[in-house]
Amino acid sequence: MRKLAIIGLIFNALLLIVAIYLQFVVAENAAVAESIIFSNHEESWYNSQEHISALEEMNLKTDLGIAVLFAGILGLLLSIIPAIKKNNIAWIGVVFSIVSFLIGAIHGTHMFS
Image 1 (cartoon, rainbow, N blue to C red):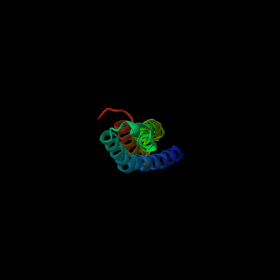
Image 2 (image 1 turned 90 degrees about the vertical axis):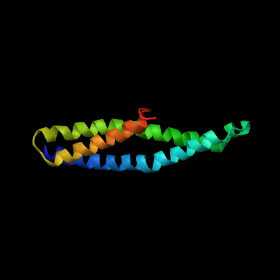
Image 3 (image 1 turned 180 degrees about the horizontal axis):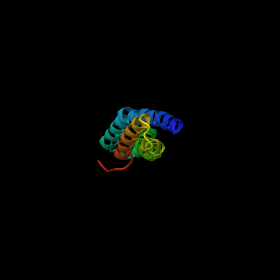
Image 4 (image 1 turned 45 degrees about the vertical axis):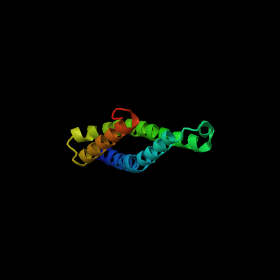
């Protein structure tokens, strides 16, 4: 169980880094892209490359959020089993996975928009 706890902790630590990147980089870029999309209303702008890249930036936030959400569930399963077996290091992985899951739920679903 100790090996599973260490694997879960490493997986959840990496997942938490991705979730923090989603929160502070991707979500901010998506907010800027959304403001660009709603500020331009010319007909020729809707077929431009800038419009398409802004839409892709907004979609990246949702796609990465869904990936973090499901990986958070997987990380929780990896860490909760050793945590129940009284391995204390696994509880850190459980906390990391719950935080990652919540960040993924915030950005992957439109729960808070």
